[in-house]
Amino acid sequence: MTKLTKRSVEAILPSSKDRILFDSVLPGFGLRISPMGRKSFVVQYRSGGRTRRISLGRFGTVTCDQARRRAKELLGAVAGGEDPAEQRNSERHTPTVNTLAARFLSEHVETHCKERTMHDYKRLLEAHILPQLGSHRIPSITRADIARFHGQMSETPYQANRALAVLSKMFTLAEIWGLRPELVNPCHLIKKYPEKKKERYLTKNELAALVTVLDERYGQGFERLSVVSALKMLIFTGCRLSEIQLLKWGYVKPGLLVLPDSKTGARRIPICDQAIAILDKMPRALHSDYVFWADGPRGFVTDYQKPWRRIRQAANLDDVRIHDLRHTFASHAVQQGVPLQLVGKLLGHSQLQTTMRYAHLADEDVRAAAATVGSVFSNLISEKGKKSA
Image (cartoon, rainbow, N blue to C red; front, side):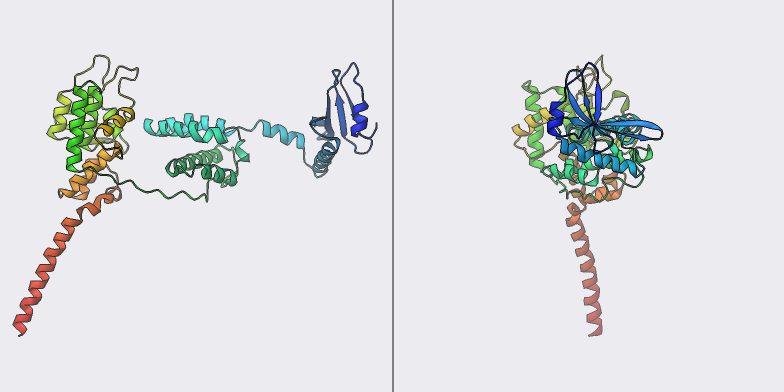
């Protein structure tokens, strides 16, 4: 035994067997020397009747003073009744966020969520969450980690808030599954970014221009019939893209689309003559049950965004999203005097509050009604004044 210093460690020569030389000053602090001459610091102690040993790092990477300080800390923890080796072993076997994400998808999302939601969750996990947090151990994630992650996505507030919601659900399930202590969800108290609702409605002239471009691009062979027809259906029905994208012939009834499932559950959608005409012109495919079919393995058009970008550019509508076609349908319905409750039914809203975003479009009708009431009151007051006179 000798005091382990830089000079003494450098002077120690390897032997034919792996051996440990212990420090003469700090009991339990030692140096392991391999037959190949590799030297690394260790700390050794007894806990629960067993000998425990922890590596402190290789000599050269870790200095003698650094290793000695770390050994003192660990031995102090042992004196206080802890078992650092067991704690380290337990941490190594603790699942990571990667593991939690896989279980979240297989045991929760696939069972309780719709296909579209599952797709969105997977995209958020793969593109944002797992590259940043995937290798972290589940119990080690702190609120500061989540705040830092959320802050790094500040330029895309909508995506940042969706990712935060997914993480919050994952860590709630981690508590239920016994992977984290209860009531310590690290996403709590993280403030979401404000989101501005995009209000873009096409005018009648813009709608006419869009339909003209759709017909022209199909006629010129630039776009497929399935894509053009599906986009027209969105214009004339106000449906969600997924409802038209996954529409099957079995769901098409006389004057109706009867969907067994949608974002808000089963739906019966009355359709106008223009929508019926679009369906009548769609040829049926032998290999697919989908109305707006494609030749791919899934049997339907999976990507509408790329053709939509081409189409909207040709129609000079670069700021219009596909979802704005749904907003346009709703806005024109309200402006034509259709009651908000009925508009909500047309759109498949589960709550009237969702439809109320279009309420301001009916201001002219409300103003006219107020003017009518005002005129009645004015006449009553005027007549009463004449009688008093």
